[in-house]
Image (cartoon, rainbow, N blue to C red; front, side, top):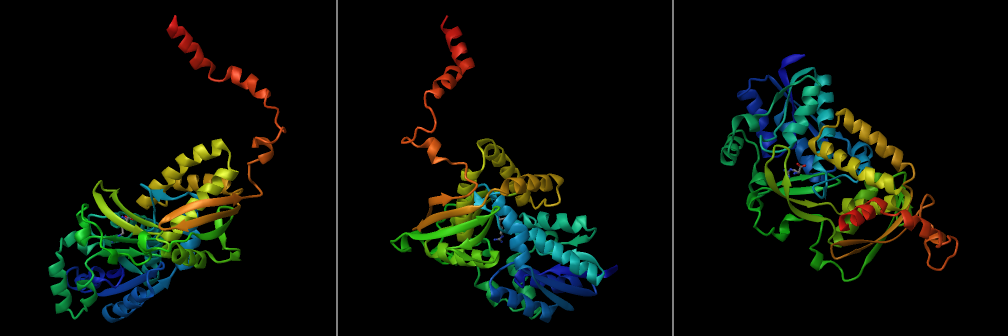
Length: 395
Ligand code: ARG
């Protein structure tokens, strides 16, 4: 292991770009290797990271993990109805995978340390550090350690011939992968400030969406979405298509106050059209095929899964145990859900499954398959203890 070589998690933005000279000049590393991990951020961004990495670092890697991100992180999240404080997690899902890829490069390069550009205020530092520490690496985080201002960063970048044009006209901090897009910072930090329309890239404003309902049919196999409107698709293609469909109907916007791991409250804005539609459809299908007891217990499991997922604690043994339970329940979550998208809303219009526990023959008002008079006996015992207590109180 070379003590003088460091591998940097690289996005090509202002922060990680100035990290390259900082790691040499301020921290004294001889060799800086940059790694950009493609989890479905805009193509231009990946390209820019590749160009900047090649220009600034001693060696650069761009690694495409989009398919793995979908199969190993997004799919389990769908099965777990993964959402934190009411929004579908995305950044949180991508961080552990990005970190594992960085570790792989660090091992290959024989580097002694890993660096990242996370600040000391957010969640990502913890999600990254957890994986890097578990792999035994020393962590260098210049943004967190040096307490730099944006002006200083821009000046330092200019002194080192790092192009900052993009950074200057991008007042927000945006994180994007194929599942969610998040926008924070700048004037959005005032939670009372109404978000300007131009921060959104995936969705139209609900009021500008078409005046007609767009119907979509989603087919699930064992909890996994496999087809859209009857067409079998890979997970990544299905999500991308549904992001377009949902987005043009104004579906999947979220403006919220979120509790970060450190306890700070933050104003966060999200776009996640496909996630909104798929989670609504998946939850609905679960209600058709799972028993009442499974559903009640799974709600608790899903909540704990989401909390651990948000914290990036993917190696926590409880996380694996919860996944095992969730996977067992998903064996029967196969079927089709029809949803209607209309001006920002998602409505389930119909659902069907061969594993459905719904029986119209039993429940229908028009059927005699179940002898209703048997309910009288059940009713005699119903709420027995509460009834007894009530009569005691009367005496
Ligand atoms: N609050 C979210 C999370 O912690 C998203 C953060 C994304 N970062 C950003 N710079 N927009 O997962």
